[in-house]
Amino acid sequence: MSRKDKIIDGKKIASEIQEELYSEIQVLKTVSPKKPGLAVILVGNRKDSQAYVRMKKKMARKLGIVDFEKNLPENISQEELLQVVTEYNNNPEVNGILVQLPLPKHIDEETILNAISPEKDVDGFSPINMGNLCMKGRDPLFVPCTPKGCIELIKRSGVNISGKKAVIVGRSNIVGLPISFLLLHENATITVCHSRTKDIAKEVKDADIVIAALGAPEFVKGDWIKKGAVIIDVGINAVPDKTKKRGYRLVGDVDFEGCLKNASKITPVPGGVGPQTIIQLMKSTVEGFKRQNGIKKLL
Ligand SMILES: Nc1nc2c(c(=O)[nH]1)N[C@@H](CN(C=O)c1ccc(C(=O)N[C@@H](CCC(=O)O)C(=O)O)cc1)CN2
Image 1 (cartoon, rainbow, N blue to C red):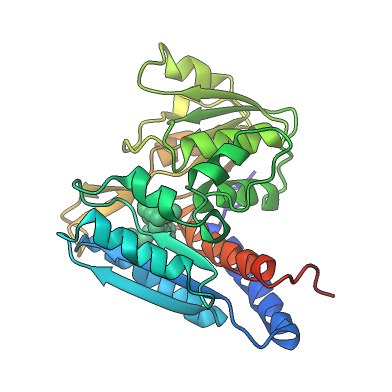
Image 2 (cartoon, rainbow, N blue to C red; image 1 turned 30 degrees about the horizontal axis):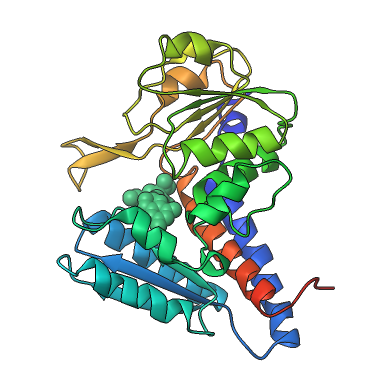
């Protein structure tokens, strides 16, 4: 298999989904005078978070989703932030609410995420949606965007998940845990590795599907990969690089060149999982809009 055939083009898949969603929104216009609305709450001045929020706004506008934005100061109190969440919970024009993470240290993330109405929790991070994701036969209203995107990348690359052994490296609430449950619901056999796992390399060597989501640059090495394995790299790490204009380059949690040799499919960084986070958020907003307006099936 050629190098090109092995690399999952995340940007291309995201633009295919964008086109599908655009068409769906055009049809929605014929059945409802309302437009889907997404509220994004950003606290503080982190450059990376500001960039992600800009990307979300830009995509929403391209698709005809109305964006509501609140940029709040770093020192905002938890009570004031809760007030903003409540306002959006009560605003019928807002179908999805997202609080950009991470939050400043003085704010309790769990309290804020708990305050988002589960019906508008497009990130899928609220305890009700997370709880339903973790149970068999219970459909959460929303599923976290990055894990949802990983499943979509695997499926759209023609990989059958059922019966496969999937090894997830990382157990975060945002990615590692939700993707483990999504893969389990797709009938994969899952192993979740973390900092106390005795021999991560040994676990990965057995995997048909590897999900790397631990936030450590190029952690997963080429000689850990079983021939034919599918590798989904969720990590986005900036490593210093003086040859680059911005002084750094982005790498994933996987040693890309090393792992490419044995992999049958692999996502690059950038241009792999990242674009899914944005487009899946838009999909979830439209799903929320339809549910909240009693729109079931189109055409
Ligand atoms: N409330 C949330 N906060 C955060 C989430 C989330 O899903 N919900 N995820 C991440 C950040 N994130 C979106 O918020 C995000 C990360 C990366 C990308 C992306 O497209 N990355 C590009 C590279 C971009 C670059 O050049 O810097 C890529 O991988 O190709 C989009 C969104 C944490 N917070």
